[in-house]
Image 1 (cartoon, rainbow, N blue to C red):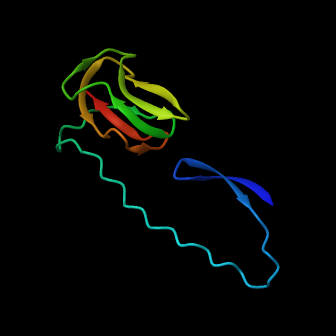
Image 2: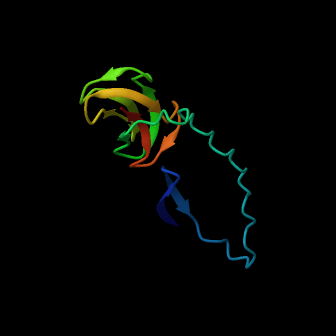
Image 3: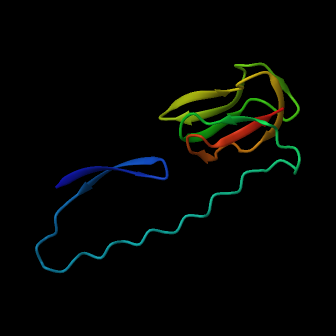
Length: 120
């Protein structure tokens, strides 16, 4: 018996693998049901994209949207909250500005460096 840790799409699984029964015939592997494609994130109207990027610092799931399009934010204000490893991580405005677009929705899985929002 061997233990492995496997990461699939940002989800971590601990897996135990047992050796075969020695019958010579491999056991039939159960087929996994295909997952639905992730829903597309709402996109800002063309021309509404800001020049200042707000990007995820770590991979995780969007837990909460703290700011709205058109809202003025100061440097350090939370724009989006990302949940990673059961921690809530605020993603903050890198400088003062106005939120031009929110590029994710609550529940979306995001990778480190993913564009979450833009500011003007």
